[in-house]
Length: 238
Ligand SMILES: *Cc1c(COP(=O)(O)O)cnc(C)c1O
Image 1 (cartoon, rainbow, N blue to C red):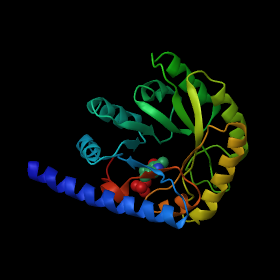
Image 2 (image 1 turned 90 degrees about the vertical axis):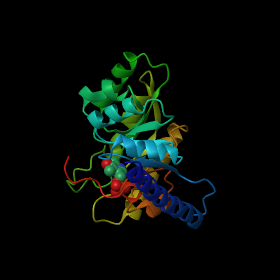
Image 3 (image 1 turned 135 degrees about the vertical axis):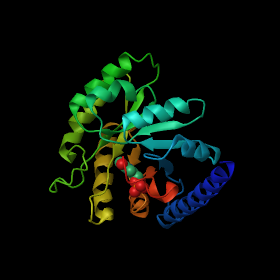
Image 4 (image 1 turned 30 degrees about the vertical axis):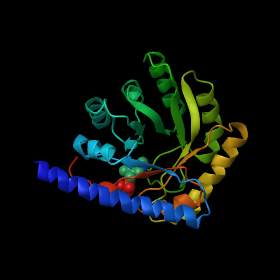
């Protein structure tokens, strides 16, 4: 058992080092002084992996299903981890998500903003939950990757900004499948710039996964969501 854990720690440590090198190289290539922040996406992987990651210096973790995330966050509540909710979110899960999430990356419709506001009001939390507006970068395709249309972002931003206990923190996107991620992330950067004219504090750009982190860093991503290249392939069964 301890041996298996040592092997897993070594594997995660090596993977993390490779990903951090890639991020550093991409930031250098883009002439950026500040490195984007790494969020390790731990969905489908056990809480024991999240604990090992914390021991290896990971501070931010991402999850996309409330049931799984809430169980892990409860089990690991003693660790100084920042939990990011990155998946499509049903309004009836808002109450649960605000028990552990520091940032919700997938705010994509008015009903969810209302639900998050209500959930925060009833949560006893004194702080604000950070909200990123998820932007659909491929409106033509019915790729099902989610998000608000770019033209819907201003109204959604106003709603988040006007809701108590929600902090408008920026934008998030997933690159369209099978298309040039650089072009898509360029569109996301434009949406972010437009948003920041009105809300200068909404500086977060959450973009970039294992396959496209370089393109995201080149387009100004401030937060990268990396799963597979740190943890290995996700178990196929869910
Ligand atoms: C799973 C997931 C990721 C991580 O993807 P990898 O390809 O495993 O790095 C990032 N963002 C979202 C929204 C995800 O659901």
